[in-house]
Amino acid sequence: MKVTPQEKSLLRELAKQYAELAALPIQKERYLRARDINDLKPRRPMVWLDEIPWHEMNINNELTLVCQDEAARHMEIFFRRTLYRWKHIQGDMVVEKTFNIPKSFTSTGMGVEVREHVLSNDDKNHIISHSYLDQLADMETVEALHMPVLTAHPETDKQRLAWANDILEGILPVRLQGYSVYHAPWDRIPRYRGVTQVLEDLAYEPEFTHAIIKKFTDGAQATFTQMENLGLFESDVSHLHCTPPYVSDFGTGAGHLTTEQPEPAPMKKVWFRAMAQLFTEVSPRMFEEFELDYVKPLMAQFGLVYYGCCEALDNKIQLLKTIPNLRKIGVSPWANAEVCAEQIGGNYVFAHKPNPAHVSGTFDEDATRKEITRIIKTCQANGCPYEFVIKDISTVTYKPQNLMDWAATVKDVINNYY
View 1 (cartoon, rainbow, N blue to C red):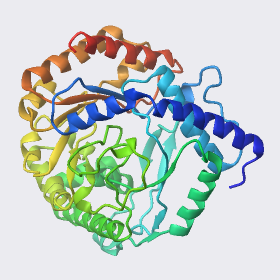
View 2: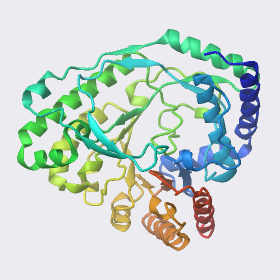
View 3: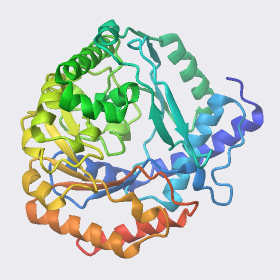
View 4: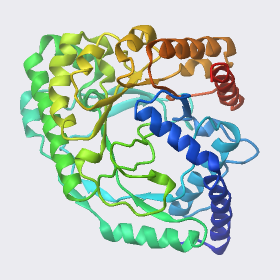
């Protein structure tokens, strides 16, 4: 991690601009509003934009990197993207008062690796087409999978903290950040087995499918236990898979509006993020048998649960309600929003994912207005605390203005109701 005097000067200048934003009073207002929503208090909805195709967004070299050192480039990316988002696609983003460094650890994994063929029509875009080769072809292979062993690297953490503090001293506090949980075995398993094969297994090879998901569930349990023992979990994470994570339940005070170094958190003060996107295609009974029965014992060990991503959950919410610590439910563009809202009511956060297709080619203002208006009316009618989080934006066809227009349009629609 060798930074030239010119690079250090650049990073300090970017950090000063960042710190000015973090000090604005609006950050506290947005933090409290996001916290209230996660506390199930209906408020004006938060609007977040994430999973942005950054390779298509550069305007006037605002995202052009100068630093050559890898660590310096990561810091530069963070500052430039935050400043860019604030200027052009702000939504209700919260700029926190620290520069966060994730705690370092490694895992041995479970003894299986993805093998695949890929196709791409844009070498700058990491969203590509995958064809997976089967790595879990028989029971013997599944039984041979081993439990992961984690190793924390505190010396690496010390080095990274010292390096960042040297650059940002007097401008921005540096904070070592732990983790919440991201658990999506039905995103992982198809990458080792193949999507079509997994769907066929659910119908024709249930015993084999149970063996696979049990192995991956055991691997997750081993991982979470070790993470807790190694002090890798944290209550005050910056993001909860593209959504605001702030909540009162964990008793952590002002979260990232403070600059104090947090203590490692036990599982009971950590968010658990889960999904089974492949299971849009399966029945509620099969969802319960192959997903919920396995994930619920894991969830029970944690503080709060956010469930759902791109899968349509309108016919599975009654099953999700059996999760005692469920707090937030993802409502995808392919779900029936009215059916979801009727079941969610005021008991959970309605985390709506607006349709990214509306910004992918030519911005569709009419469709956006209708979608946002529909969700507002639906959530208000059913007493749902709710938020808008546009994500999975694989492309804007190199038209950054599409996302800018989307953000402005959504704000304009919301202003009609709040």
